[in-house]
Each structure stands twice: as structure tokens, then as C-alpha cells.
Image (tube, rainbow, N blue to C red; front, side, top):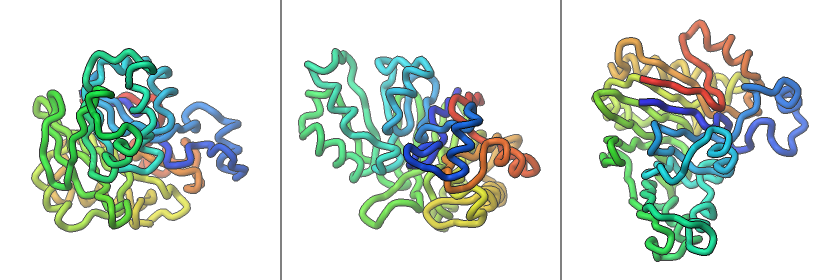
Length: 273
């Protein structure tokens, strides 16, 4: 499997649009891997994970043909991960669309889409599938297991995902605090080859574990995966989903994570397993 990080920032992007903080000013000056769009991923050629406000830039920058995308997994409904209006433009008169697109998401995220498109999925060539924590389902050639993330409010089940194909396993683990015990128990049954882990709080709140993680908590999360036997031998671990409020640029994050054997994600990073 080939996973491309299409975006690596938290909600505001990096640099944040109107922000005058030193970290954003530095990112504008340095450019390169310090410029981060909102978090999303492409897996091989047929699956996307999250579809937020930077989708147009991402598909053009990375040469993605959306007509080849059969499935989208949504982690939750927050605005940096879901832009419902984008799906409205699939209808006739706005776009020529010949293939159905399956969207897998929690009930709240699907409601956000239906609030824009109305009840007729066929008008937009959409197939909307509700996903619940601990549910297993197929998305094209992939077997997907939804995990209960600790992130959204009580009225929404934010999700992380384990994705499997051809004996290989990927964890998409952004936008979560420390998992509940039942999630750790579930994940212990897998052997993960590539783990994408949350790191929104960066260096500023290094051990934060509520709704998001900081750098020290990210390392502890990786260590807990190892303790549970959930990481395969030689597993590749990547930190992703960074906020400018974490107060560390790309090189500073790399310097911090290097002794722990964790790679720092950036827009355009390609990971193959």
C-alpha cells in the first residue's frame, strides 16, 4: 500500500490565515515543509481519508484524479476534515460525474452532508454508509476497522481507522486523545506496519492527552502500542496533524522525535509498506 499525506496541519492550517504569531511568521519565511494544509490522506489510487477545505489544492498539487476515487473515509465532522458543500458540486449542472462515490462516516458527519445535498444520494452519485466504533467493513479492496477516538463532543463518535490489504496494516490515528481501554484492547489484536499518530499540541503542551496529543504523549502512545503487541516488527511510525500553537517548526519537531525513531509528517510525504 502507498499512503500519501495530503495535509499535515490542524484546524487553522499552518501558517494560520490571519495569525501573527512567531511560529506562523517563521513558517511563511521558511516555506517548504513548514507550510501545512489541513490533514488528509490518499491510499493508493482509490481511497481518500478526510475531505476538508484544502481538497481542491491537494488534488491539483498532487495530481489526484478524483474520478478514480471509489471510497472516502471520514474521521469526524469538524470543518478541517469535512467540507460538505464539496459534495454538492457533484450534481448535474455543476459537474459531469459518471461514477458513484462511497462515503463512510459516523452519523453526525453524514448528517452534515445530507444537510447540504438533501436525501437523494443518487442525484449526487453518492452512497453514504454509517460507521460505528469497532465496526469492520470493506471499502474497495481494503478491510477497515473503525476505532473509537477520544476527540469530538458527546453527540459524535470521532473515529480512527485500521486499514488492511494484502497482509499489511495501517493505523490512521490523528485527532484523538488517549484511547479508552476498550480501544486499546481492540487494537491489540492487530499487527500494524505503518502508524500515523496524532501530535497537535507539539512542544508547547508536550504531555497533553485530552482530545489531542503533544510530542511526549505521541511517544507514549507509540510505546503503548508496542506494549500491547500491536506494532509489527520494524513498524514505521509517523507523527502528523500539527498546530502552529504547538510552537515548533518542521526541523525542531524532527530534532525532538529523532531519538525516539518517529518520523515527522509533512504535506506530500509518501509512505509505502
